[in-house]
Image 1 (tube, rainbow, N blue to C red):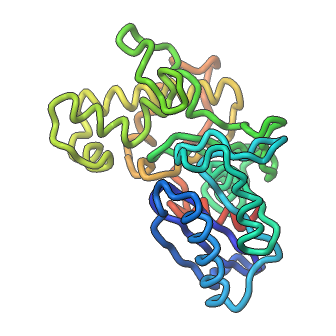
Image 2 (cartoon, rainbow, N blue to C red; image 1 turned 45 degrees about the vertical axis):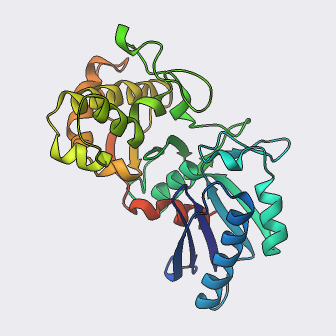
Length: 291
């Protein structure tokens, strides 16, 4: 059996799968926002109840998190759920649960899941993107997760917007302390804030995208996404670009963004495919189970 946990800003999900990838048990709870000890306790309780339901669990537990542990200290960093930053989450979960914890970024889990048996199955290289409350990425080459020597491979959400126009520079201030990070332009909250700023009524980002698909706001969002993903192709040149997170349901991503690539990518042609995550918002927890 394999046990995986996906820790998100809104919900925590746990799953137990068998050697044939059949789901034996799967449960979700709300994330105790701003409460670190509450998060550790909620994960421990959720693992216990899910493994009870499954009749067992893994020898170790894979956990996907909205950030990553530092390679040397193990301290959490780069978490948009900022209550996790500076904490020894892996060690604290090991004490709470009593088993080895294998912990990595949630976008890495998305990439691993989709490359293994999802939308990127069979591809030589997969770059997976999370577009949701935050923006991140993960890289799988030859079926193997590439985390990098510093553990930050694929941290695409915190590079500047490429080829910014005058009104896009220096860009909004990001929670990481810098200005103009892709997360400040492409995330769900970024769409919602821009919509209200333009005079619209408060709406979820997915509703804005579906009801006002032809609006100048969404046209610019797609243009920024095309610029941002063109840089991925120039650096990693993946065979498949998998889009996960809540905004992956925006259908124009898969038709409009590739049309913009030829004028942006440093190549005479662009063969990269862009596809939605096959496992939806469960890619993270299935990838965690594969850790």
